[in-house]
Length: 340
Ligand SMILES: *Cc1c(COP(=O)(O)O)cnc(C)c1O
Ligand code: SF4
Image (cartoon, rainbow, N blue to C red; front, side, top):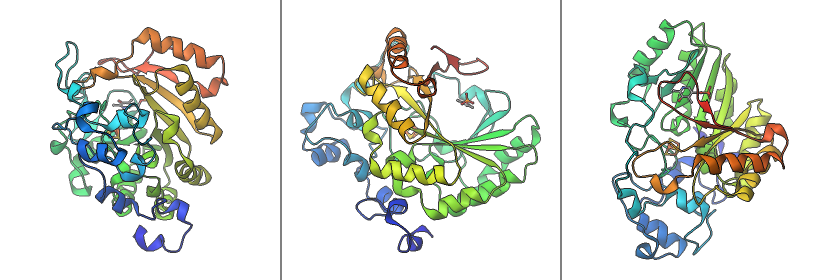
Protein backbone atom coordinates (compact mmCIF):
# COMPACT_ATOMS: atom_id res chain seq x y z
CA UNK A 1 0.00 0.00 0.00
CA UNK A 2 2.53 2.53 1.12
CA UNK A 3 5.13 1.33 -1.35
CA UNK A 4 3.17 2.59 -4.31
CA UNK A 5 2.44 5.89 -2.61
CA UNK A 6 6.10 6.35 -1.90
CA UNK A 7 6.81 6.90 -5.57
CA UNK A 8 4.51 9.87 -5.84
CA UNK A 9 4.82 11.70 -2.52
CA UNK A 10 7.66 13.76 -1.03
CA UNK A 11 10.47 11.54 0.09
CA UNK A 12 10.68 12.84 3.64
CA UNK A 13 7.37 11.32 4.57
CA UNK A 14 7.68 7.97 2.86
CA UNK A 15 11.19 6.59 2.68
CA UNK A 16 14.40 6.86 4.64
CA UNK A 17 17.45 8.74 3.39
CA UNK A 18 18.57 5.44 1.89
CA UNK A 19 15.31 5.44 -0.09
CA UNK A 20 13.98 2.39 1.77
CA UNK A 21 10.39 1.85 2.75
CA UNK A 22 9.77 1.13 6.42
CA UNK A 23 9.01 -2.50 5.58
CA UNK A 24 12.41 -2.84 3.91
CA UNK A 25 14.06 -1.24 6.95
CA UNK A 26 12.46 -3.88 9.18
CA UNK A 27 13.58 -6.71 6.88
CA UNK A 28 17.14 -5.45 6.61
CA UNK A 29 17.60 -4.68 10.31
CA UNK A 30 20.80 -5.69 12.10
CA UNK A 31 20.10 -8.82 14.15
CA UNK A 32 23.18 -9.63 16.18
CA UNK A 33 25.63 -7.91 18.50
CA UNK A 34 28.51 -8.95 16.24
CA UNK A 35 26.89 -7.46 13.15
CA UNK A 36 26.15 -4.23 15.00
CA UNK A 37 29.77 -3.97 16.17
CA UNK A 38 31.05 -4.59 12.65
CA UNK A 39 28.73 -1.88 11.31
CA UNK A 40 30.32 0.60 13.73
CA UNK A 41 33.92 -0.57 13.44
CA UNK A 42 34.01 -2.02 16.96
CA UNK A 43 35.49 -5.32 18.12
CA UNK A 44 32.71 -7.33 19.86
CA UNK A 45 34.77 -8.83 22.72
CA UNK A 46 36.43 -5.48 23.46
CA UNK A 47 33.07 -3.82 24.07
CA UNK A 48 31.48 -6.68 26.02
CA UNK A 49 29.04 -7.46 23.22
CA UNK A 50 27.27 -10.77 23.69
CA UNK A 51 24.00 -12.04 22.24
CA UNK A 52 21.38 -13.61 24.48
CA UNK A 53 17.75 -14.72 24.24
CA UNK A 54 16.45 -11.14 23.76
CA UNK A 55 17.81 -10.75 20.24
CA UNK A 56 19.46 -7.60 18.93
CA UNK A 57 17.20 -5.80 16.45
CA UNK A 58 18.36 -2.45 15.04
CA UNK A 59 17.30 -0.87 11.74
CA UNK A 60 20.31 0.37 9.78
CA UNK A 61 19.09 3.96 9.57
CA UNK A 62 19.08 4.06 13.39
CA UNK A 63 22.59 2.56 13.54
CA UNK A 64 23.69 5.28 11.10
CA UNK A 65 22.88 7.88 13.75
CA UNK A 66 25.58 6.34 16.00
CA UNK A 67 29.17 7.51 15.98
CA UNK A 68 31.59 5.13 14.27
CA UNK A 69 34.08 3.57 16.65
CA UNK A 70 32.45 5.01 19.79
CA UNK A 71 31.64 2.19 22.21
CA UNK A 72 29.95 4.69 24.53
CA UNK A 73 27.62 6.15 21.94
CA UNK A 74 24.31 6.88 23.75
CA UNK A 75 22.25 5.25 20.99
CA UNK A 76 24.46 2.17 20.81
CA UNK A 77 24.27 1.56 24.56
CA UNK A 78 20.48 1.34 24.33
CA UNK A 79 20.47 -1.49 21.80
CA UNK A 80 23.71 -3.50 22.07
CA UNK A 81 23.37 -6.86 23.86
CA UNK A 82 26.11 -7.10 26.45
CA UNK A 83 27.47 -9.81 28.70
CA UNK A 84 26.50 -7.81 31.82
CA UNK A 85 22.82 -8.51 31.00
CA UNK A 86 23.43 -12.07 32.25
CA UNK A 87 24.21 -10.95 35.79
CA UNK A 88 21.68 -11.88 38.46
CA UNK A 89 21.17 -8.77 40.59
CA UNK A 90 19.07 -8.74 43.74
CA UNK A 91 15.85 -6.75 43.34
CA UNK A 92 15.80 -7.13 39.57
CA UNK A 93 12.92 -9.32 38.41
CA UNK A 94 11.07 -10.30 35.22
CA UNK A 95 7.70 -8.62 36.02
CA UNK A 96 8.57 -5.66 38.29
CA UNK A 97 5.38 -3.71 37.69
CA UNK A 98 2.71 -6.34 38.13
CA UNK A 99 1.55 -6.57 34.52
CA UNK A 100 0.40 -10.15 34.96
CA UNK A 101 -2.03 -9.00 37.66
CA UNK A 102 -3.46 -6.13 35.60
CA UNK A 103 -4.95 -8.24 32.79
CA UNK A 104 -8.52 -7.33 31.93
CA UNK A 105 -8.64 -9.93 29.16
CA UNK A 106 -5.94 -11.56 27.02
CA UNK A 107 -4.03 -8.64 25.49
CA UNK A 108 -5.55 -5.80 27.58
CA UNK A 109 -4.14 -4.35 30.78
CA UNK A 110 -6.04 -2.04 33.03
CA UNK A 111 -4.21 -0.46 35.91
CA UNK A 112 -5.74 3.00 35.98
CA UNK A 113 -9.31 4.24 35.82
CA UNK A 114 -10.81 5.41 32.51
CA UNK A 115 -7.98 4.00 30.38
CA UNK A 116 -6.97 0.57 29.16
CA UNK A 117 -3.83 -0.55 27.39
CA UNK A 118 -4.03 -2.93 24.43
CA UNK A 119 -1.04 -5.04 23.56
CA UNK A 120 -1.49 -4.95 19.82
CA UNK A 121 1.59 -6.91 18.81
CA UNK A 122 4.75 -8.38 20.33
CA UNK A 123 6.98 -6.77 17.72
CA UNK A 124 8.92 -3.50 17.84
CA UNK A 125 10.97 -1.42 15.41
CA UNK A 126 14.00 -1.84 17.68
CA UNK A 127 14.89 -3.88 20.74
CA UNK A 128 15.80 -1.70 23.72
CA UNK A 129 17.94 -3.49 26.25
CA UNK A 130 16.25 -1.79 29.24
CA UNK A 131 12.75 -2.69 28.07
CA UNK A 132 10.45 -3.70 30.89
CA UNK A 133 8.63 -5.99 28.49
CA UNK A 134 11.68 -7.99 27.46
CA UNK A 135 10.41 -10.90 29.53
CA UNK A 136 6.73 -10.46 28.71
CA UNK A 137 5.05 -13.60 27.34
CA UNK A 138 4.28 -12.02 23.99
CA UNK A 139 3.63 -15.30 22.25
CA UNK A 140 0.47 -15.53 24.39
CA UNK A 141 -0.65 -12.07 23.31
CA UNK A 142 -3.11 -11.75 20.47
CA UNK A 143 -2.20 -9.84 17.31
CA UNK A 144 -4.73 -9.31 14.49
CA UNK A 145 -8.40 -8.44 14.32
CA UNK A 146 -9.70 -11.97 15.05
CA UNK A 147 -7.43 -12.34 18.08
CA UNK A 148 -8.30 -8.87 19.38
CA UNK A 149 -12.00 -9.75 19.75
CA UNK A 150 -11.76 -10.59 23.49
CA UNK A 151 -9.84 -7.34 24.16
CA UNK A 152 -12.40 -5.31 22.23
CA UNK A 153 -15.27 -7.03 24.04
CA UNK A 154 -13.71 -6.30 27.43
CA UNK A 155 -13.32 -2.63 26.51
CA UNK A 156 -16.87 -2.48 25.17
CA UNK A 157 -18.20 -3.99 28.38
CA UNK A 158 -16.64 -1.32 30.63
CA UNK A 159 -18.31 2.04 30.06
CA UNK A 160 -15.81 3.77 32.35
CA UNK A 161 -13.07 3.35 29.73
CA UNK A 162 -12.71 6.50 27.62
CA UNK A 163 -9.21 6.02 26.31
CA UNK A 164 -7.40 3.09 24.76
CA UNK A 165 -3.63 3.06 24.67
CA UNK A 166 -2.21 1.10 21.77
CA UNK A 167 1.03 -0.41 22.90
CA UNK A 168 2.89 -3.65 22.60
CA UNK A 169 5.41 -4.03 21.40
CA UNK A 170 4.76 -1.18 19.05
CA UNK A 171 1.44 -0.61 17.25
CA UNK A 172 3.11 1.13 14.31
CA UNK A 173 4.76 -2.04 13.08
CA UNK A 174 1.26 -3.15 12.10
CA UNK A 175 0.22 -2.54 8.50
CA UNK A 176 -2.05 0.42 7.78
CA UNK A 177 -4.96 -1.87 6.79
CA UNK A 178 -4.73 -3.63 10.15
CA UNK A 179 -4.56 -0.35 12.07
CA UNK A 180 -7.44 0.98 10.06
CA UNK A 181 -9.60 -2.03 10.96
CA UNK A 182 -8.64 -1.72 14.61
CA UNK A 183 -9.56 1.98 14.64
CA UNK A 184 -12.90 1.15 13.01
CA UNK A 185 -13.64 -1.41 15.73
CA UNK A 186 -12.64 1.03 18.48
CA UNK A 187 -14.67 3.89 16.98
CA UNK A 188 -17.69 1.60 17.14
CA UNK A 189 -17.47 1.49 20.95
CA UNK A 190 -19.66 4.46 21.98
CA UNK A 191 -17.96 5.40 25.26
CA UNK A 192 -14.45 5.62 23.75
CA UNK A 193 -13.12 9.14 23.07
CA UNK A 194 -9.36 8.85 22.76
CA UNK A 195 -6.81 6.53 21.22
CA UNK A 196 -3.24 7.01 22.30
CA UNK A 197 -0.39 5.46 20.30
CA UNK A 198 2.61 4.56 22.43
CA UNK A 199 5.28 4.12 19.82
CA UNK A 200 9.01 4.35 19.33
CA UNK A 201 8.76 3.67 15.58
CA UNK A 202 8.70 7.31 14.34
CA UNK A 203 12.03 7.81 16.13
CA UNK A 204 13.59 4.58 14.86
CA UNK A 205 12.12 4.36 11.33
CA UNK A 206 10.78 7.82 10.43
CA UNK A 207 9.77 6.48 7.01
CA UNK A 208 6.88 4.76 8.84
CA UNK A 209 5.01 8.09 8.89
CA UNK A 210 3.54 7.79 5.40
CA UNK A 211 0.72 9.83 3.85
CA UNK A 212 -1.36 6.66 3.97
CA UNK A 213 -0.81 6.30 7.73
CA UNK A 214 -1.74 9.93 8.31
CA UNK A 215 -4.91 9.45 6.27
CA UNK A 216 -5.77 6.40 8.38
CA UNK A 217 -5.29 8.41 11.58
CA UNK A 218 -7.43 11.24 10.27
CA UNK A 219 -10.31 9.02 9.21
CA UNK A 220 -11.62 8.22 12.68
CA UNK A 221 -13.99 10.09 14.97
CA UNK A 222 -11.66 9.30 17.88
CA UNK A 223 -9.10 11.81 19.19
CA UNK A 224 -5.67 10.51 18.26
CA UNK A 225 -2.70 11.24 20.53
CA UNK A 226 0.90 10.15 20.09
CA UNK A 227 3.43 9.42 22.80
CA UNK A 228 6.78 8.76 21.18
CA UNK A 229 9.85 7.50 22.96
CA UNK A 230 13.25 9.18 22.53
CA UNK A 231 15.95 9.15 25.21
CA UNK A 232 18.66 11.26 23.62
CA UNK A 233 18.78 14.28 21.30
CA UNK A 234 20.87 12.29 18.77
CA UNK A 235 17.81 10.12 18.11
CA UNK A 236 15.99 13.16 16.79
CA UNK A 237 17.77 13.91 13.52
CA UNK A 238 16.37 15.92 10.61
CA UNK A 239 14.46 13.07 9.06
CA UNK A 240 12.78 12.13 12.35
CA UNK A 241 11.85 15.76 13.01
CA UNK A 242 10.35 16.03 9.54
CA UNK A 243 8.22 12.94 10.05
CA UNK A 244 7.06 14.20 13.43
CA UNK A 245 6.11 17.51 11.91
CA UNK A 246 3.86 15.62 9.45
CA UNK A 247 1.98 14.27 12.45
CA UNK A 248 1.67 17.71 13.98
CA UNK A 249 0.51 19.22 10.72
CA UNK A 250 -2.17 16.56 10.64
CA UNK A 251 -3.41 17.91 13.98
CA UNK A 252 -2.11 15.05 16.11
CA UNK A 253 -0.60 16.11 19.45
CA UNK A 254 2.79 14.46 20.02
CA UNK A 255 4.39 13.95 23.44
CA UNK A 256 7.58 12.18 24.42
CA UNK A 257 8.46 9.78 27.16
CA UNK A 258 12.03 8.93 28.03
CA UNK A 259 13.64 6.49 30.43
CA UNK A 260 16.45 7.75 32.65
CA UNK A 261 19.42 5.57 31.68
CA UNK A 262 22.98 5.49 32.97
CA UNK A 263 25.44 6.43 30.26
CA UNK A 264 22.67 7.61 27.94
CA UNK A 265 20.93 10.62 29.46
CA UNK A 266 21.96 10.80 33.12
CA UNK A 267 23.72 14.12 32.79
CA UNK A 268 22.35 17.63 32.76
CA UNK A 269 23.46 18.58 29.28
CA UNK A 270 22.09 15.41 27.64
CA UNK A 271 18.71 15.77 29.32
CA UNK A 272 18.57 19.49 28.59
CA UNK A 273 19.37 18.97 24.91
CA UNK A 274 16.74 16.23 24.61
CA UNK A 275 13.98 18.42 26.07
CA UNK A 276 15.10 21.44 24.08
CA UNK A 277 15.11 19.59 20.79
CA UNK A 278 11.65 18.23 21.54
CA UNK A 279 10.05 21.59 22.26
CA UNK A 280 11.79 23.17 19.28
CA UNK A 281 9.46 21.01 17.17
CA UNK A 282 6.51 21.47 19.57
CA UNK A 283 6.68 18.04 21.16
CA UNK A 284 5.90 18.08 24.88
CA UNK A 285 8.28 16.17 27.16
CA UNK A 286 5.63 14.17 29.03
CA UNK A 287 7.37 11.67 31.29
CA UNK A 288 10.89 10.82 32.38
CA UNK A 289 10.62 7.30 33.77
CA UNK A 290 12.70 5.86 36.53
CA UNK A 291 13.73 2.56 34.94
CA UNK A 292 11.86 -0.48 36.21
CA UNK A 293 14.14 -3.02 37.93
CA UNK A 294 14.04 -5.56 35.14
CA UNK A 295 16.38 -8.55 35.02
CA UNK A 296 19.23 -7.84 32.60
CA UNK A 297 19.05 -4.03 32.81
CA UNK A 298 20.74 -3.28 36.14
CA UNK A 299 23.72 -1.62 34.42
CA UNK A 300 21.38 1.23 33.37
CA UNK A 301 20.31 2.06 36.92
CA UNK A 302 20.39 5.72 38.00
CA UNK A 303 19.65 6.50 41.68
CA UNK A 304 16.44 8.47 42.28
CA UNK A 305 18.40 11.20 44.10
CA UNK A 306 20.45 11.78 40.96
CA UNK A 307 17.28 11.91 38.84
CA UNK A 308 15.82 14.58 41.12
CA UNK A 309 19.00 16.67 40.84
CA UNK A 310 18.85 16.46 37.06
CA UNK A 311 15.24 17.59 36.94
CA UNK A 312 16.00 20.50 39.27
CA UNK A 313 18.95 21.49 37.07
CA UNK A 314 17.04 21.50 33.77
CA UNK A 315 14.08 23.28 35.38
CA UNK A 316 16.36 26.29 35.80
CA UNK A 317 17.08 26.37 32.08
CA UNK A 318 13.77 25.53 30.38
CA UNK A 319 10.18 26.74 30.30
CA UNK A 320 7.86 24.80 32.60
CA UNK A 321 6.21 22.85 29.77
CA UNK A 322 9.62 21.55 28.65
CA UNK A 323 10.33 19.78 31.95
CA UNK A 324 8.96 16.21 32.01
CA UNK A 325 7.33 14.72 35.07
CA UNK A 326 9.82 12.32 36.64
CA UNK A 327 7.77 9.23 37.44
CA UNK A 328 8.01 5.72 38.69
CA UNK A 329 5.71 2.77 38.14
CA UNK A 330 4.87 1.09 41.45
CA UNK A 331 2.60 -1.94 41.29
CA UNK A 332 -0.80 -1.54 42.90
CA UNK A 333 -0.87 2.29 42.69
CA UNK A 334 -3.74 4.15 41.01
CA UNK A 335 -1.47 6.22 38.78
CA UNK A 336 2.19 6.55 37.98
CA UNK A 337 3.98 7.92 41.04
CA UNK A 338 5.43 11.39 40.53
CA UNK A 339 8.93 11.72 42.01
CA UNK A 340 9.61 15.29 40.82
C1 LIG B 1 1.39 4.08 31.96
C2 LIG B 1 0.11 3.36 31.74
C3 LIG B 1 -1.05 4.05 31.35
C4 LIG B 1 -1.06 5.53 31.05
O1 LIG B 1 -0.84 6.33 32.14
P1 LIG B 1 -0.88 7.91 31.94
O2 LIG B 1 -0.42 8.44 33.25
O3 LIG B 1 -2.28 8.28 31.57
O4 LIG B 1 0.07 8.22 30.82
C5 LIG B 1 -2.21 3.32 31.22
N1 LIG B 1 -2.25 2.00 31.43
C6 LIG B 1 -1.17 1.31 31.81
C7 LIG B 1 -1.29 -0.15 32.06
C8 LIG B 1 0.05 1.96 31.97
O5 LIG B 1 1.14 1.25 32.31
S1 SF4 C 1 10.32 0.01 21.47
FE1 SF4 C 1 9.38 0.17 23.51
S2 SF4 C 1 8.35 -1.82 23.83
FE2 SF4 C 1 9.80 -2.07 22.13
S3 SF4 C 1 11.71 -2.84 23.04
FE3 SF4 C 1 11.89 -0.59 22.96
S4 SF4 C 1 11.12 0.13 24.94
FE4 SF4 C 1 10.44 -1.99 24.68
